[in-house]
Image (cartoon, rainbow, N blue to C red; front, side, top):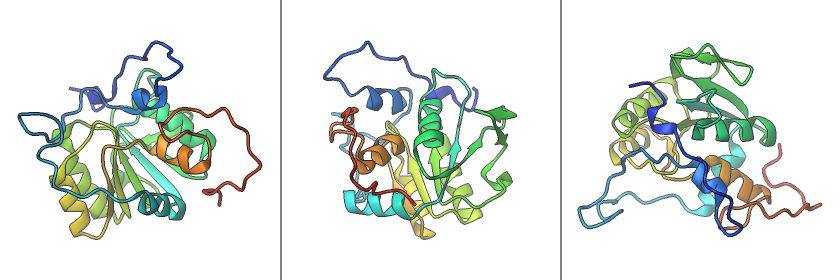
Amino acid sequence: MSTNDTCEFTPPAPAPSASADGVACELPGAAVETGSEGAGLDRTWASPSQQERFALLRRSRSVAIVGASSNPARASYFVSTYLQSSSPYDVYFVNPMADEILGQPAYASIADLPVVPDIVDVFRKHDDLPGVAQEAVDVGAKALWLQLGSWNEEAAAIAESAGLSVVMDRCIKIEHARFHGGLHLAGFDTGVISSRRQLLSR
């Protein structure tokens, strides 16, 4: 199985009330820790608050996307293009199967990056997540971020025990855009152009 098998998604049909960004960010094939009666029953880890997520995004300067892809049909591609064009972050791509993604070099592992990333944003299948968490710890990253559809409490425990901040089952693109003033709370583009000071600018 390739590195990005869990990243593939089918673009939704346009719908005015639908959260297209949320669908595009989500990892449909990613397993999450759930109980037999429904989603979320076995979730014991407490997610960071909105204020804590905002503070993490504001203080960060670099993001490593693990499981990045040059395929426009992948969720990681959607998020990568947004972060490159609409965020203040230095973005790095990790995929051992690629040499270049979106005009930038792709690296085989987090350890191969030329910098220590502030945030490690992960697009990998469920069983790979603890290993990625350990890689993030080993290089000294400051945060582990698992995309929509990804929830792994073993990975969270590995990261948190080493002092990393952890966010799970949220899209970094949606979170950044929401705090940046470009999204309604439901996750879709407001279409509003504002002169308000951008909260996440450097």
